[in-house]
Image (cartoon, rainbow, N blue to C red; front, side, top):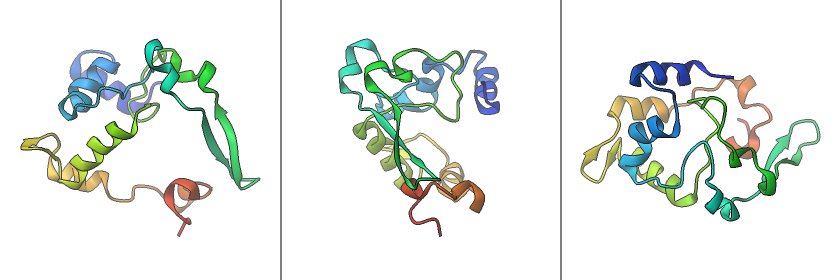
Length: 139
């Protein structure tokens, strides 16, 4: 299902929020060559299976099998706010840019206020519940 952010990006770029438009916005300037909404067939052997937290059982459960991953096929509509798959190197490039307040080397990729907003907690207590694996102990 398309998200508002995905539709907004598509309208602003007069395109669909495809891997191409996402690359124009953020991936390409950071050198993030392995980030997208789909893993190319020639790189699928690098993809690991994914797990998620089961809030009832309070344990990790199987989520996505790398052998037949949801990321091995293009999405019907890139969500714009979720669904990306990436590598540690690409994450590092993105987080270095955030730590540098929107700068990648000497190039400004994002405005300082945009980075400050991105780095502030946007979730409610209810949204954080059950996500302790990703957000610490839930406090």
